[in-house]
Amino acid sequence: MPSANILRPHRTPLVAAGILLGAGLGGFIDGIVLHQILQWHNMLSGQLPPDTLVRAKVNMYWDGLFHAAVWVLTGCGLAMLWAATGRADVPHSSRTLGGSLLLGWGLLNVVEGIIDHELLGLHHVYEYTPNHLPADLGFLAFGLALLLAGGALVRAGRA
Amino acid sequence: MQKIFLTLLASLWAAGAGACPWCRPRVRAGIYTPAYTTNVFLVLLPVAVLLALGIGLFYWDKLRPYFFTSYAKR
Image (cartoon, rainbow over all chains, first blue to last red; front, side, top):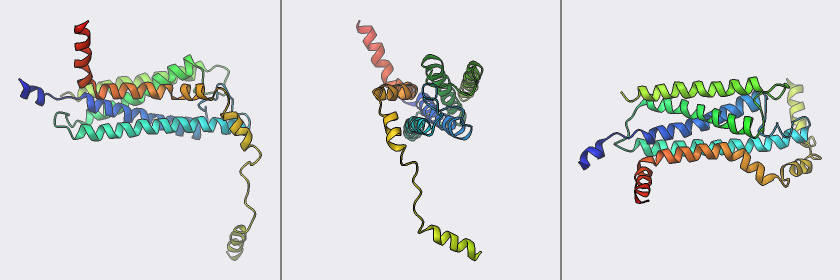
């Protein structure tokens, strides 16, 4: 039944677009709030503490590279969203998109938290303490909460 | 008001303040170390993982039959 296949709704393109957009915007929140406004850490502050002007500027470079990368994520998400909204088989669901945005933000926190904070030690969420674990775990817990909320919203979008 | 205007006007002719001219070579040396490529890879790694996940999910409908066909042929 080819006609039934054509009309079958495909939500994965919208979910994928929302995840990339959410991850990109979540990366901007991380950079703007934690790097620049609160100045809790920089991308390489675990390896190169920004305790001199030169070291702070070197860290600023790596922050800039991270921001450029999350800009690319956001751009790809936007392109995917544009492509998905032009398809008749992709349902126009605000809940699915909103949930996917939260999923993307949560995924960024969890993936970045595990790779950068725990495995590689490039930086920690709050550098100005000898015990980095509580803030790192709080960051991961916030990411998991976003994943749960996003998943629930995406499931609600099925209806 | 006139004093403020004159001060602002005079500042146009003032010598430009150097934004740490002495530290720029040191900053460049701090960035372009032998570990530069490794640092680029490490900083971009989480973003690359998420990008691969998103692109894979976006094209999942097209990729899924390919994977299933590939497994079936083995």
